[in-house]
Image (cartoon, rainbow, N blue to C red; front, side, top):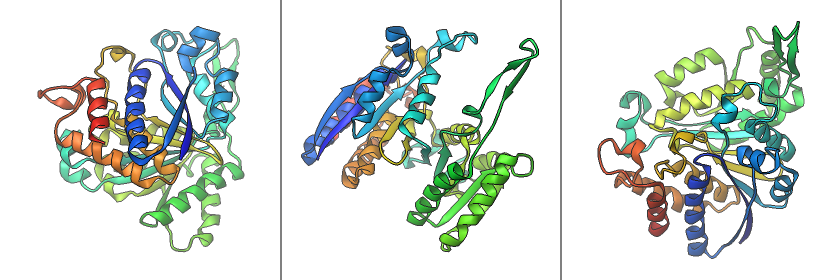
Length: 351
């Protein structure tokens, strides 16, 4: 198979972890006889510095003409620490999601047998955890009207959803549940928010189309508690943009490190694959960042093309590296820590 992949390294540790995912992907392509053409493009703070825009038209054109996007991370302290900055890296990410129609963020949370003791939660609470969040990405409070009034002393952010937006995300949730354990949880705040009541009634209206799926409805605060009590109780969860942003970050540490969890952002056409962690600017250029989440995002990318064996090979290499202690300092726990590039080299050689 010939694949054209847009490569958006971004900021901070993004270029370092992306380099390792490219090494691993090229090793997989060589092993299975595929041909990958990488198409680098600017985004985030790097793009602002270069052209004054966090998601330039040129980058969008590269993404649109590609089969998928492999993405690193965005963010820079000089923008984080300046609330008045008129242009911010995160605006590029939101613009990209909207422009590419990436409405469904797929964020798995699973545990590694060799790392059960690394989790902040007790081993007996997390064993068997294998859940997936589907977070709606292009609606809600992040995209609603926002602003200041009363001499800028009053701020507002409107949360708006349409039934169509909820339906298309919910259908993906039902379809994913049918491929897994046929359990689906709709996360909302329907006792308070009108948008959540729309979410709940829309999902309820779809239940008859998927009679084999057992659907539950839980308030977001209850899910936030149960995720750290019994995460293995969940399988597929669907939710709106803001709730999904918060809950998936909470879930990400169950595995023991934010540097381990991949994600995909999907729409009707192109898919974007990225680690869930941020740009971690404190580690940029030090060769200490954990590349596993980006490498596993590449595995999700192959699987999205229907290349399941290729994805499996990457996952097996990651599991082997973790079991043998070929890890960066966040997981070394006093043992030898390997550099970002060393981990990438080891994974590629293993494949």
